[in-house]
Image (cartoon, rainbow, N blue to C red; front, side):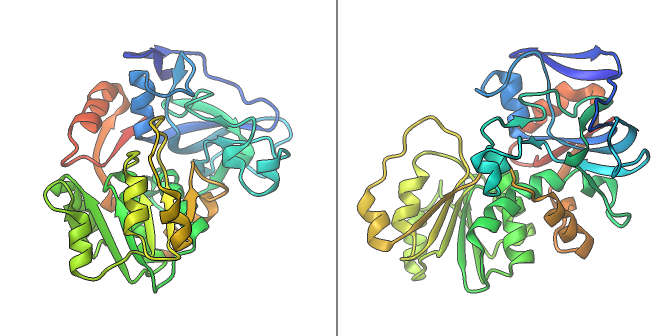
Length: 337
């Protein structure tokens, strides 16, 4: 079989490998589609501190089960599955409180263990979620990106009275916008970014008001309309946004951080405690695959609005370069296997 392997940073090859056999409790998936994420690019460029090399990247993928290991009784050959990349122990403290995404022995497919940018991959059977017949392949591969938004919103529980401010109109921001408007019916979703084309994408995904904060003052725009957001989500992941969010937030608001920057954020405690703000962080997803699959089945979200490019896997280098460089028109890039 062919696999996309990052041997070392900036050293990508399509390698011939032996087709793996599923161990007890595992299934083998014939990969049909995979999506490129920023973390795949970071591993390729050597900017992901969790990755070990060589590594088959890819944690957004969909396919067909073509072999099952011993002891697997609830998954069968021929079933369409979307694969949750989060592998957890199930018994540590985080797992015991419903947060397998921060398991003390966390393994993420495509980061700590070989992922889905391969013609075949073996994965734990329990990580395979059956895709309803009504959900097309191109939407099935988009389940994982929407679980990021499901994890955020599952923590902060948006309501139709919220005024939400989303920093960043990249893939994480756009999935979150869709979920806020289409699932939770949030009253107003404001999106800020410094790329006009990204802001246009935000409008197509449900944003009520967009602000280019590279050209105008976000604080002044909000102040002019007397708006104090009750829910702020940092999907741009810059350290400076935390303090800005604290300043802009309504009393009793919720703020969600999604970034992994190692740079410190300078935040005054008084701004947080004076308004009794609630600060959340969100990483990966905690059992959100069935949630997103239900949204897809009900027609509540539209992955097609995010898919901008598709390539055969043999053109992986071109695909990653477009993903990295074309920030104006590129959102989600799919690979066909």
